[in-house]
Image 1 (cartoon, rainbow, N blue to C red):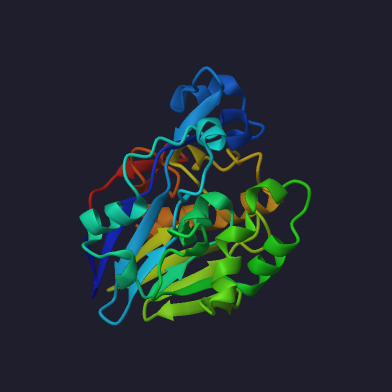
Image 2 (image 1 turned 60 degrees about the vertical axis):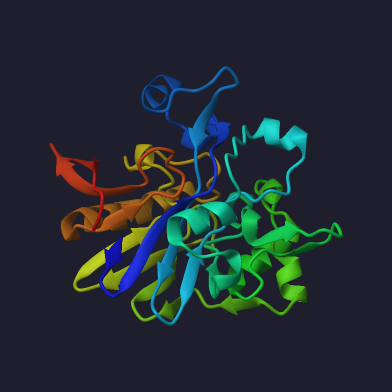
Length: 281
């Protein structure tokens, strides 16, 4: 997909499953199960839609999915249904390999966004999966990841970022920064204090990646907020600000965890916001 001077490709990692109740917080099961039918373990289908952006000067990958460093037990627990490695998907969809990526960006360091940062080599060592890339994450997010609280400790695995530090590939960024001309990262508290969303602007158009602020199309209603969010009231405030703006300005919206249709526009329909299908911006 061409977006201004940039080539943009959505690179799905793999389907996995999380508890539907946790994914929808206070929303009753009778409501969320209509749009996200659960399996026998009450888990719903999700994916991780990484984004490749080629600017000419840079080949950028936003998020790296769940990774492949999983035991059989945890593969079953999370319902990971991997068809092919992320590296193969990257080659098939974007035409580049891990060695060609020059920048990797993590919106935050939860395992389902940063798990593919590293891989295990032939000697059993955990090493950077993108050997020639600079990895970007906010300084505040790294500080939180190194000392998480009780509620989100299980989402942070140090082997997803410490090998990058040891190898000199991890660069710590501010709460808002420019990655490349037209591409910016912006911090929006709610899921935690330091999660970032990405924004790509070109020719008066905007493509916006909501990360875990609005993880799936089903989370567009303001009050449909994950139980995983540390600050749900702040999530609500940010959604009330950004989602109407996205509808007014015709943004392309990338919902990272949607398993079927991650790229949408929002329209207002009888006073409510509704995602609609698009193939390109």
